[in-house]
Amino acid sequence: MAESVSYREHQEASAGQSVPCGVVTVSDTRTSKTDRSGSLACELLEEAGHRVTFRTIVRDDPDGIRGAILKGVRSVDVLILNGGTGIARRDNTVDIVEGLLEKRLPGFGEIFRVLSFEEIGSGAMLSRATAGVFRDTVLFSMPGSPNAVGLAMRRLVIPELAHLAWELLHRHRQN
Image 1 (cartoon, rainbow, N blue to C red):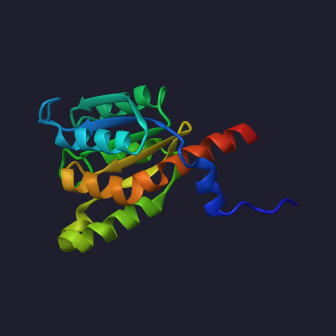
Image 2 (spheres, rainbow, N blue to C red; image 1 turned 30 degrees about the vertical axis):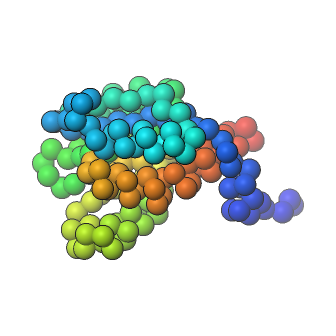
């Protein structure tokens, strides 16, 4: 039996990989001019050496969210969704994402809420941030505030993005 490859070796194997990414902003009010969170996600991805090849803004509507995800996963390895993760009646993103996921990454939401708690206190429990894999694409669903997007991207997504994409590609090539 072959020796398993360690986490650090996987990270090293994926280092420097430029990953095609997409950003979907879910909002009933944001436009391309006012979408600070989507712009921040794009800037942080590009600063880290990744390529944003898909970007859109959709209303917080189940069909619109699902359609944006289905379109995005055709051309990217990682799809970042921001907005619609709370408990308000119009917050639909997490419900759609979780209904599509084939594999879940519960650690993303758990760690995001811990980090958020450190910054904003008990209000962090209102976030239903989630992540997982759908059609060999990693989906991250995070709150739509610029502070939340910055926190999730800087502390969780960017540090693991190339590694996650490498794991999916590596797994796909072995099967």
